[in-house]
Length: 70
Image 1 (spheres, rainbow, N blue to C red):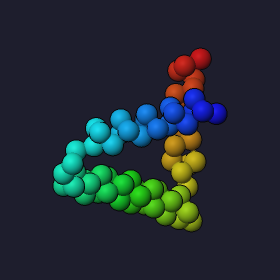
Image 2 (image 1 turned 30 degrees about the horizontal axis):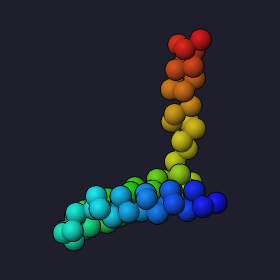
Image 3 (image 1 turned 180 degrees about the horizontal axis):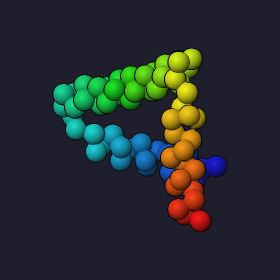
């Protein structure tokens, strides 16, 4: 257990040393996180939409791809 604690301490120390001291980097990280969350929410809304049937749209493409692979 002592080795894993030392490993985590070393990783954390290296991580802190590699992060630039300027906080201007953080907004871009937050922006990418917001963009990912937005894409996830958009996909969830699309999949839960009763008017959209993803299986009807992508089913033939997947079937065709599987037949080409075989």
